[in-house]
Length: 406
Image 1 (cartoon, rainbow, N blue to C red):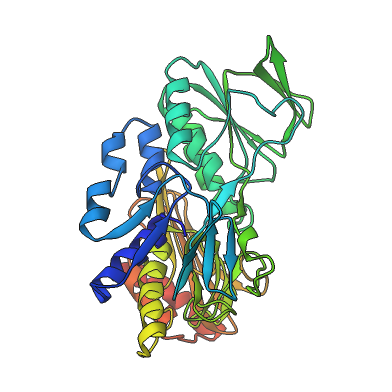
Image 2 (cartoon, one colour; image 1 turned 60 degrees about the vertical axis):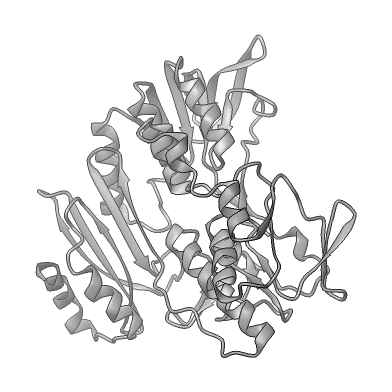
C-alpha cells in the first residue's frame, strides 16, 4: 500500500526474490512512481516532468506488478488477512504499509477553499504552483520546515518577490542552533528572500473571492499573489485503527520493519522504526531511508513466507540539500531533534560559511550536521563511527573535527 519510493522499491525487490509471487501495489495518486526530491527542481524549472517520473505502466507490466492507481484501501482485515478495496476483499500473505503522510493545510481564517493557497507534496500540487508562478509577482511561504524552504527557494528562483514566514526564531529550529540557522538565513537573504521570524498567518484576506494578502500574528500585512504552506505532515495511519498495529508518531515497527501484527510491515515516511544502530525508535522521512526500507521490507516479507533468516535495519539515515543558491546542508544519524539529551560539539568557519555539529549520546558518536559548500570531508569516516557505535569521551571529541582533512 503506497507506490512511493519505499513501496515501489519493495515491489521490485519482491519480484527479484520470487519470480512467481503475486504482487499488488495500491496507489491513491494517478501517477506511477516519481522522484519526490526532484519536485523542487521541477518547480524551479530546472528539470522537466518527464525527468521526474521514475517508472511507467510498462515497467510494472514487465515485472508483473499489479499496479492499482487512484485506488484507496478502505480497511485492513487482520483476521482474514485481506484488505478491503471498493467493497472487495483482496488477500495477502505479507502486507506492506508505505502510506506516507499528507501535508497539513493552512487553517487560518480565509484559507479554506482558496485556489491560490497551496500545499507542496505531490506532483499535482507542483504543476499547479508552477503554473501560478508564471504570472505571480509576490509569493509568501509559510512555515519553518524543509517544505516551506523549498517553496521560498522556488518562488525567488522564478523571479517572484518572496516573503518567508517562520513561526520560530529560525529555520529548522528543532534541529539547528542559532549559529547554523544564521548561515542558512544569510543564503536566503543573499537570494533576495524577505525573512519574517516569529510570525504566523492570522488571516488570509480575500478580494473578489481570491486571497490577495495575509495579516500576520504581529499585525503585518503582506500583499501577494500566491501562498505556499509548509506546516508539516499528518502521517497516514488511520488504517491501523482496530487492527492491533501500534501507532505513535508513525506506524511502530521492530528492527525488521515488522509491526506488532505478524506479516504486516511498514516502511518510508510513515514508519516509526527501531534502529538498532541508534538503539531507539524514530521516523526519518528521507529518500535514502525510504529506499533502504523498501529493500529490507521486501527481504523480510519474503522471509516470513518461506522461513528464511530475516535482516535488521543497518542504514544510517541521511540527507543532503542545496539551500538557495549559496549553501548546502547534510545531516546524518541522530540530532537534538530526536533526543534532548544529545551533547553537541560545534565548529564554525565563518569566512567559508561552514558549520559542523557532531552529536554524542553517552560518549557514543550518533550523528552530525554539516553546512557549507565543500564541507563534507570525513563523512564516510563519520558514518562508519556511527555504525560501529564508537565511543569518544569528552576530551577526545573535538579531535573528530580533524577528520575533515581526510
